[in-house]
View 1 (tube, helix red, strand yellow):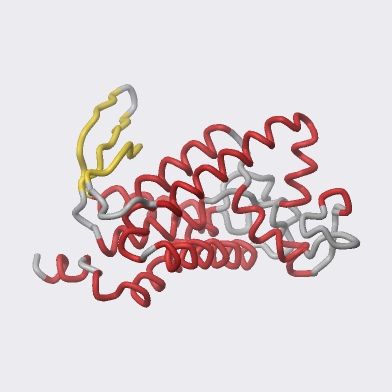
View 2: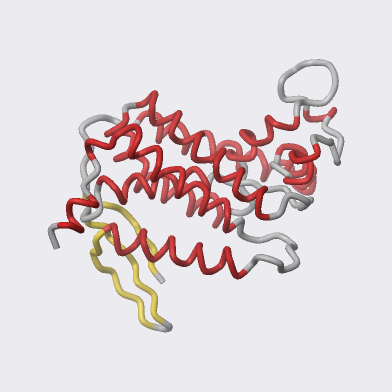
Length: 242
C-alpha cells in the first residue's frame, strides 16, 4: 500500500483554487462535526442519492435545508455539487485534501485557475454519472471530493508521469519512506479502483467506497486533460521512447 505525502514538482504560480477548495472542504466538514447526530440528516439532504436523481424524487424532504433560498425544497440536481464538499470522517476528508494538494496544484498550474475549476467540477459530475449508472436504484447518499480528485490524478499522470512523489510504503509490518515516480502510484491506485469496482457489481450495497465514482472521475480527467492541455501531455511520449 502506498500513501503519497508530497510531490517534488514545483509550480510557477500560487494554486489559489486548490487552496480555496481545500479550505471550503475543511470548513464544511467542521460544520458537519458541529451538528452532532444531525449530521446524518444533512448528509441525506445534501448528499447525491442515485435513486433520487434518476427518479427526480425527493426521498427525504429538504425544506429544512433549502440551499438556494427559494420557496419549497431545493432542486435535487444541486446535490451533485453540494455532495462534493461533504465528507464522512476525518480520514475521508484528510486523505482527499492531501491528494488534492499533491496533485491539484500542478494541474491548476498547467490549466490556469478558471479552466482548472471547470475541470474539477466536470470530473466530479462524471464521477457521479458513472456511480449512478452502476446502481441507479441505490438510496445511499454519496458524498466526498474523491471523484473530482481522481480526475486530477489522471491529469497529473498524463502531464507529469515521472514526477517524484515522497511516499510511505506499507507492507505488513514493514513501513518505509521512499520516493517513487507518479505513474507507479497513480496506476496502482487506479487498478485498485477497477478491481474493487467490478468486484462490487451485483453485491448488496450498504455504504462504503463509491468505486465507480473514482473510475468515472479518472476517465473524465484523461479526456479533459487531452482536450484542454493535450500539448503538455508527456506520458505517451515516454512510453514510445522506452
